[in-house]
Image (cartoon, rainbow, N blue to C red; front, side):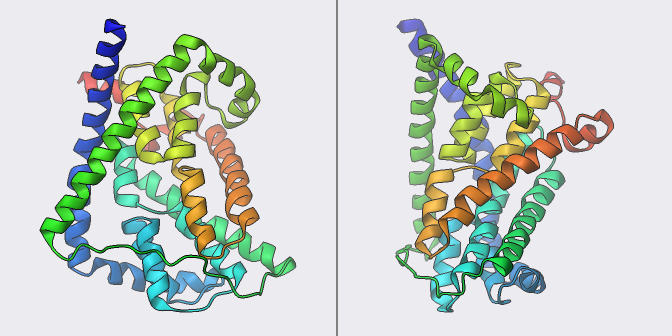
Length: 317
């Protein structure tokens, strides 16, 4: 038991340190940019793209807030705009929000795992637009023109001072630390009890389809269900310790970039009135197929080198 606790404490420290040293400077920079009005600049740039996916240009404000911050921020902007969208439109907006949100933090996490910033941004933004465009085509055949029913208006307290903002971030980091510690303890127990191996055997057909090895399976599932910060943070540590092969780290990060926090984020978008089949099953199928295609494409070393670096090699230097 003592050796278990010591190893667990050391791993928790490594994972949280690698995660927090990435997140802290990024959230500060995002806060400064927000105060300078960068969100409005980004929204103006995104506005023409909204027409391509069947949305009013004003929805660029919602997506810009979501990309720079999180889905909660996008929901707040949407409610404040007070515009009425159809269920099809809110589902398309939900597709954009689910696929590309929290980019400064999540792209930085992917970078620590070895995935280039440019590739992560292209994957998330182009993936979001591609998913939204496919939903637009689907709704052309199966219309959902009824007005979207807003089930809940998020009561988000916006920090009006730097001190209030700092307090919010401290609470957020403490919660992340607690969840990571709990996750790592559970993962160790699953390995000891043999449950992890059983899960890997059951999911082996899906893993083969995605091109992800069993060694990255549990971490990928963690990220898909709970979020990029948790799955990505643990994956960074596994990659640096050499327990997961570089190609599997790359495949897992691609999967987590497109499909993470599947339960919480989906529920948030459903509260805006989105169609469950579109934002849950549609997102799931879209992500699985796209990652399977990209995994096979990036088997070519010359292409992979442009998008991924082996963190074990860089750390050794």
